[in-house]
Picture 1: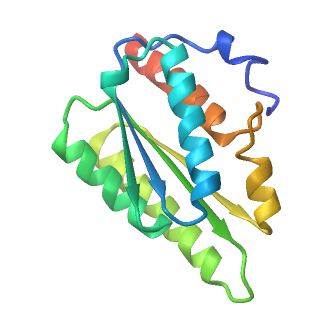
Picture 2 (picture 1 turned 30 degrees about the horizontal axis):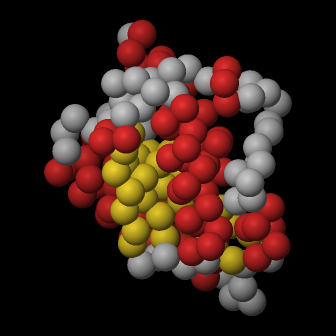
Length: 159
């Protein structure tokens, strides 16, 4: 894990009253599903009730910001959205365009609703890189997403 993260998820803040939506891209679904599954597992370990976690899939990473916006519109009690996707580098600049659009889209949603969208749409140079970041270990982006969520929701709660 990065230098700023606790060594184990057991050190993350408990967020028992959180309502969280998880969205994922259908591209590279083996990796995305592994990140989603790990995020669900970590949220449950932080005492988030299973009925307060919803999981949604969309066709691709470009659709994730729209999905986040619609989820916040549909459920005003939603506290955060965790978004997962894998964008594989290609021979054109399409991957850069996708990643840029996703970041801008999430920023717009965050600013509009004043609630966090945790961006774990990863740009990778190979599918092996994606597997490393979605494996069954502490490097799984689901762990990092839940850490960011617990830190932000704890901070917001203390305001």
